[in-house]
Length: 164
Figure 1 (cartoon, rainbow, N blue to C red):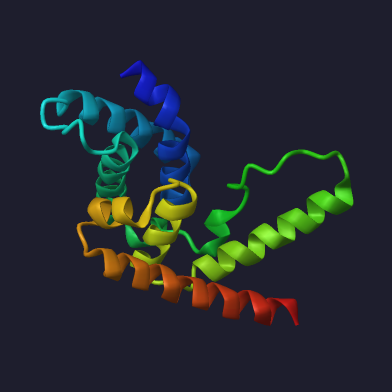
Figure 2: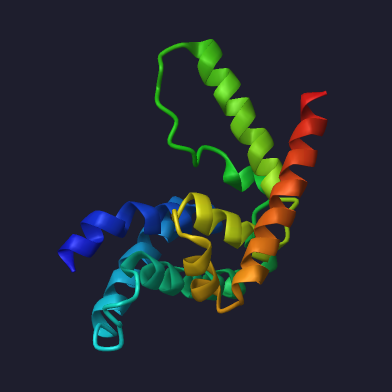
């Protein structure tokens, strides 16, 4: 289990942080993911991918947490701020440009449907293959690919509008 935490912990936490937009919730649920994985280790099939298995648990826990939130607790795209692991270059201009780019990306992500957000976050934060994403979300491969394609189209359109 320690190897799983070491190898997959950052991806699990990154995915949860991107979905929940709250560092404390992401940390709590990341710990819960590994506890659940340990408790269900007898159900894990070795031929499967550990990261996919862990992110499936993370996805379900995140959805449950979001459902339990009160409506006034849900965040707008402003909740996405400061979630990117930008390096601190020390250059205020570069930091400002990166901050604005991050704000625009997160505003565009907020325009996606929840399933499109989840697919893109699993792909880019979780670094899963589309087969693993389909398995994690319990949908056919072509459906996962379609959600990704449509989500990327919306992002491209929105970001192109922001560049004008």
